[in-house]
Amino acid sequence: MEVMIAAVLIGLMLALLAGGVWIGLALMAIGILGMLGFTPRAPGDGMAVAIWSHGSSWTLTALPLFLWMGEILFRTKLSEDMFKGLSPWLERLPGRLLHTNIIGCTLFAAVSGSSAATCATIGKIALPELQRRGYPESMALGTLAGAGTLGLLIPPSIIMIVYGVAADVSISKLFIGGVLPGILLASLFMGWVVVWSLMNPGKIPAADLKTDFMGKLRASKNLIPVILLIGGVLGSIYSGIATATEAAAIGVIGSLIIAASQRTLNRKSFFGALMGATRLYCMIALILAGSAFLTLAMGYIGLPRHLAEWIGGLGLTPGMLLVALAIFYILLGCFLDGISIVVLTMAVLMPTIQAAGIDPLWFGIFVVVVVEMAQVTPPVGFNLFVLQGLTGRDMTVIARYALPYFLLMVLAVVLLYTFPGLVTWLPGHMIG
Image 1: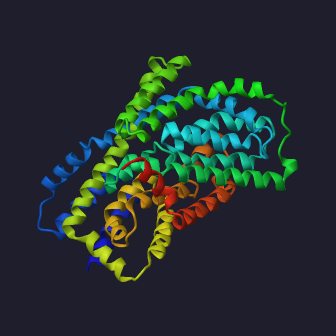
Image 2: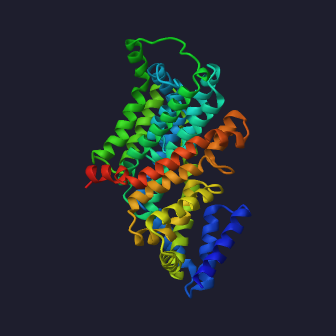
């Protein structure tokens, strides 16, 4: 009976989404229909309580602040400065300036929190420069598509905040838990670039000039703003001085200072960043509100509990369950963005995850990495859309360039499952 109810509600939801109904409103509509059709309780008061209690969460305050910080930095010359600061240090490394895509995305991800913003910001400065110097398009676009996903994993991450709120997991622990997996993924990407460059030495242009050590140090001054901002935001969290929300406020202040020092802060850019963050947060908040009510409605129906019991009855081991969920998330990511995926599935899946004995902190990082894969899978890979807009290239071509990085993310998931301490060790030692 519960499987039939689930099938009916999922079918109605897919129909609403296919009809162009906003995700948040579709979630609310399914919650209302579910309560009216399968429970004796009226949906009105439950909807009001669920949306208010979820929307007034202090933890959720970090989300609009981090979005605002990313919007401010998107309008500065930070990515250009990072390119200038990193380039001299990569002259002798196989692949040379291709690594600026990866390292630049890693650094910008640590002050952005958004995959699309990371990909677009680094791409605007790096792609024309790599094209001018004759680097192969396949590697330039592939590294950018893959490394742009680090905006989801390297803290502060917008999707980690959403997961933390939806699954009731410490956002500070999620941030710290994402550090080593983020470094691991960036290292895998750089390792692939090195291997490819050694196999195809004639396709990498020679270095324009050799910079001496003092010249490299002088160029490194361009990295000071981003390093200070990363230190201020993440250092305040890791040291225990600030919560994630307070660190987000520090990030906004720091990004305003950087924008002012680079003379990019004016009335137009200030209000543009503010309105950009407001529009994005309103979209996310509506989805979260719909998800909160749908969670309540599903609880009244008893669907999560029965579904968890049904999955538990299949006799899947934790490993098999994670493989099934990974495939499920990748398929879902072909049609929905990462935030929607998280809020749509957490209410149903968390009882099952907990019953299987899987650590919710570890599962949060697992979900983020798998959602990263969805960022580079057509037809709705957000990073593919960003690069298509920047280059005009066909989506399938960009997806083919991104395939090696998708496979490296699969390898990263295997490593995280084999060595769960990559996620749990740092939070356990830095936060009691």
